[in-house]
Image 1 (cartoon, rainbow, N blue to C red):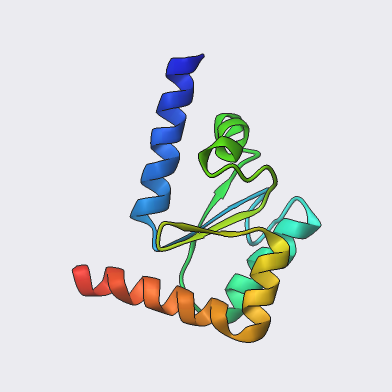
Image 2 (spheres, helix red, strand yellow):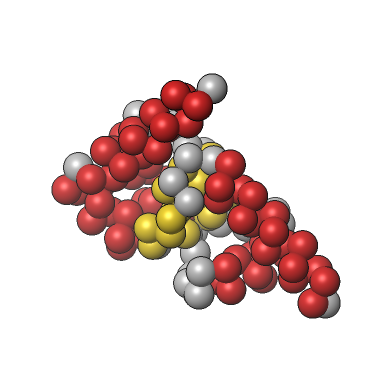
Length: 115
């Protein structure tokens, strides 16, 4: 079990560091499986910025071990530029203030300049 945990945490770390913006959610932005994931994904879509997502329902190992990655127990979880931003409430606050779009744009621009 410990070996599996290490592998999954390494996979999560790769997803978080390889994608400028990644949302761990229940379902997909097009078909969310819970209200919190739905509202969070919608806030990201509204920015017009690119983002990746991981459906934690489709990957039970990630669903099990992601809460240990940054000690955040609930879903969704939003990472921008490798940093945990938080869940639904925090994402909606960031969106309301305009900060979400700025953070996402900066993270996406950073990756674009590396290509």
